Image (tube, rainbow, N blue to C red; front, side, top):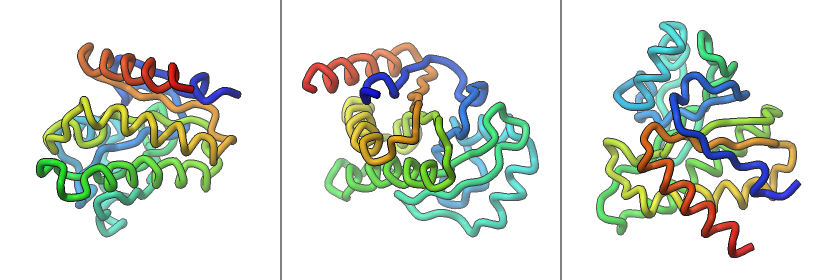
Length: 176
């Protein structure tokens, strides 16, 4: 199946998506926070926090998996994106690691679908105009490596972010 047919762009609430795993743009403690992280923790219920406490945190660029509890998705893959310091502190490499490690964890656990938020584009300050194309390119490369992953959704909460994904997707797949 062509890569572009395995990537979907959706606008809405990531916590309501019915996929095998939601990706949580977490902080390094994994104990909840604001934005997507807070929304996922609230929707999943207190059991998620209890399980996250047992994981010992997570390093930037890495990923860890938990149950989804009260979410529609049975699993949550937590990843810690880089804080934007201007682009000269390996932010791009760390952001790519987030997407690669999430995809590897999904494949390792035989998941067929997952949904990503715009990792690091909220309070971590990563410029969406740079993060979105990087995310799409990285996931497209990973889909070549992991043919069993059938669907990857990129979920945007705002119309502006959704439009950035649409444009980046059009640019990426017009090149292929």
